[in-house]
Length: 128
Image (cartoon, rainbow, N blue to C red):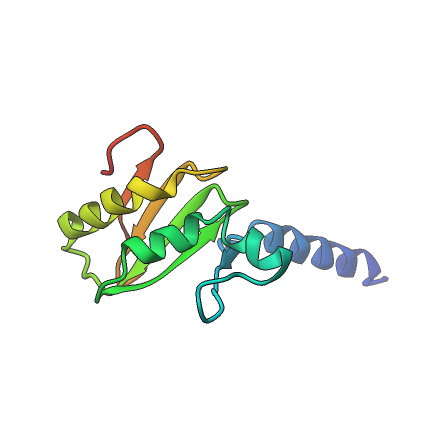
């Protein structure tokens, strides 16, 4: 009996699982000294300036980073907040909302130290 059909099934299963991975496509903006982005990739990673604007607005202790998720549809803010700091997370979300909704950005997520989502916002709505 041949094991070839089983090998093909195994490969197909692995490819399907990889396509369904929880790891979203993300990008981060890393401005050069002086704040200028370099090249087309940096401009794309910054999502029309939204990532840099949010980074500047939230430049404070406790905010670890800002990145774009998807195709610049969501700005994700990583923090050192504990799971019980939802109120502070909403404040950060509201501050980010003042500058984030440009171009394709339609949402904001604030993650705590454990990577739990503590607050979220959508364009035209209040952060929850």
